[in-house]
Image (tube, rainbow over all chains, first blue to last red):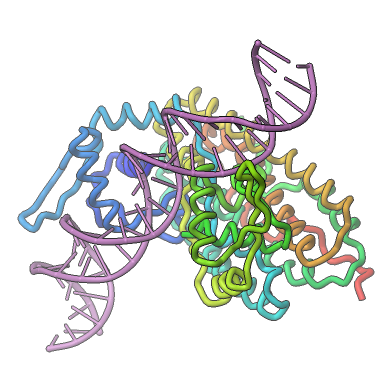
Length: 203
Length: 203
DNA sequence: ATTCCCATGTAACATGTTACATGATTAA
DNA sequence: TTAATCATGTAACATGTTACATGGGAAT
């Protein structure tokens, strides 16, 4: 619904970015919020400049152009956040595949699940690394805290995806036995936390 | 990349469906794999019929039309699963919003996070209900097992989203203290499972 | 009578992808 | 000198949204 808002979000941190840098943001595997293709970013930037949401902050002889957000852009992003409803619709190709695994035989299904598992494990380690790097800088402003929190969310979600994929063959192939039991246990565990509890040292 | 495959996936269960029923699948909040708008479904169905992936299984005087998958459709979905790579790109409006919360003041950010939290809690209870219903039928074939597993995944992901959102104000507002400590604790917890361990009764 | 759910579409528009084209700079 | 990375675009095409239009059947 809005590459526009993804770009404004990236530029609102205050650092001017060019199309190439923005493309890196939108094609990064660990960045799980917005994807866009290269050409779309450049044309969207031109459109946004014309409508006054962003402006050129620097342009060299080669046409390399950095953009920064304008007051209109800042107003637009606040308007979007505060006065429009989130769009919770999803198009998730890998999830659709996992839902459809039963149409192929067990061997194939297992291969496909393993391929997905290795992808998710790769993401898991990229995220861990990113969080470590992030923690080391310790800038501690609102932008930094927000991003650190988002990485924690992504990692938690990836962790549970990995766990699920590891258990998938078992769920799929188990003859006919204690399915109800398993589900009851799952319900009992739902109170367990992925995140650390508040420490006692807090004011 | 493919409403086509989402439709084939739904029809491959063997039960003929009409456009309206498919629209329910693609607009359901608990269904977290594919969204499509009403009109898109109808035009895609016409296109798919012309290309031979599906065929009309029943049509009444009012034009109400059910479709079923053809052998070509079954071949196509297997080809898609086994011979094309998953597309892991994402466009997630609510995640983008959560990444951008810092641009508004604390009070606003808290309101927005609470709105998202109540949405996720609603989904959480819908999913729990769905899983209970599903468990009660106990059909126990491949389709049923696959779907039950997917609902478990969705629930686990929703649970971790809820936990994260509950902790968000704390993460956001904590003065400047033990952030590194918190992250270390989080790393220690990563072995904890969202899913029940294999029971000892297994063969 | 009226409202809600069932059910299907068209047309104009907005958004996103793919293939192609270009060229500078940096490191091996 | 060759490959990788930085950097920007255009044009044709595919996909998806919004507003609009229509009408049957069931329940209040």
